[in-house]
Length: 378
Image (cartoon, rainbow, N blue to C red; front, side):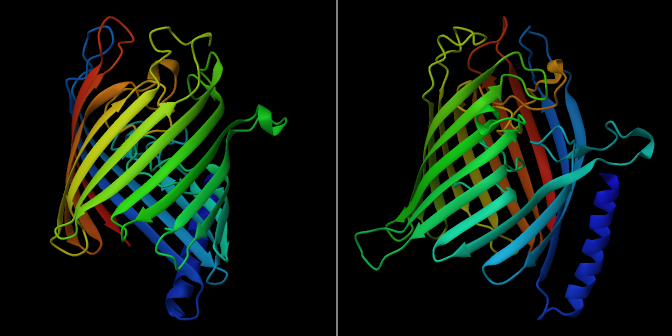
């Protein structure tokens, strides 16, 4: 793996040098980004009533990507990133953590795909960005890149009565069984997406089927089960200038868990979620500010917790030898302010306050966190 990554980096350097010299004729596009983060955690109560130690971390992330454009409709891409290979939700590395004495850093492939479009159809195969519309990372983390096949059909007309509509679907394999497809751990996703009233209102109802999902990730599972999650997503533009948007998401897992061995009775009906957010401002040019407040109430089985974000609290599966986060079964707030320093650099400050909905032990878990990110992209 290390040899393959070094070869890729070398090829990216050579090809990029060539593309820079032949900018108008080249079909190559090279890009990347770097993040530095300062993070403080406190008031993180465990289920036994004790508190995790307050924690201060300095963290960073690096990513490099390369796209090759076969023509204006067809392209291939690859991207690598830092991060623990077992921790798909989090590409950030902590300075001095598990790489003591200035050892080497873990790097892996984040994306590798082929995509094409033709007469309103768009499709990709491989490992790529989560392809369905979403308002935030509470259902699916931006750092989790599914592997599979995706297809979208865009429908547009000249009629004032029929709105533009995107119909999307995909099959994504979480873990291959080496047997028939129905034995795999997989996700099927379906979404309708439309913009109404001159793009002021966006609606994107979705349905996600998760099959053969382990209760604990990374090999610590004791049983497998399914999710059937209905998502009703919307985004409303309240004002154009200054820009004010309101977002609302409703999640409902339609599976019946009352007879599923391994799921406690007090969690069997914890299957719904509500998320509301309001944002002010935009980041188009140097000196721009943006602010956002989000409230989340996400019950235990409203999402697959180790595919959702792990930003809001320090809750994870470390006691089961997995670094993955378990960020469902919580309610709380996220407050964000962001400043654009120039076209390639920005600062983002985030504050989180969370509490568990249903206690796993004698006490409900809690957590508070603040972080400052510096992002540079090229």
